[in-house]
Amino acid sequence: MSTKMVVKQPQPMMISQESNEWSSGICDCCQDVPECCFAFWCFPCFSCITAKKHGECLCLPLLDGFGLIPPISMSMRVSMRQRYGIRGNMCRDCVYSFFCLPCSWCQMSREMKTRQIPIVLVNAQYQ
Image (cartoon, rainbow, N blue to C red; front, side, top):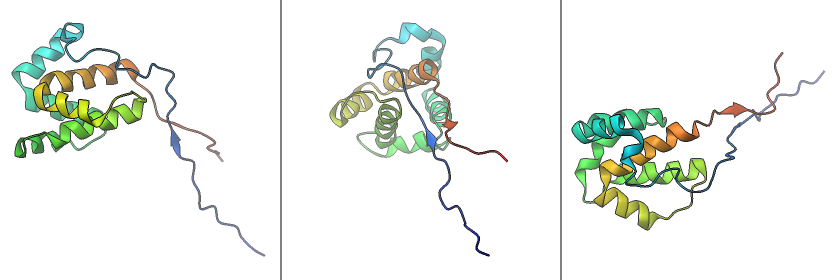
């Protein structure tokens, strides 16, 4: 008698039916005024909460203060662009992260609210 072990598990798959552009511009803070006020008055708290919603460590954005260009903010923008299939480049992410940091985090938060793509397991077998 031989037994066969399954070594490959179903992988999460995300398919976006949305546009390949950001759903709002970098300066469209009027689309969500309470959130922009929160980001303006308590930016460290806002960025930590947004990172947590994105699935990252809660305190990760606090490391941004140790460099000229905020590496965590830039990485979050790149991650979000890849997750949602948004066109862009590292140069633009770098510029937004350096010159428009609170606006950049607000844009990422609005994007997560707009997209809300659930992760669904495909080809999962239930017994």
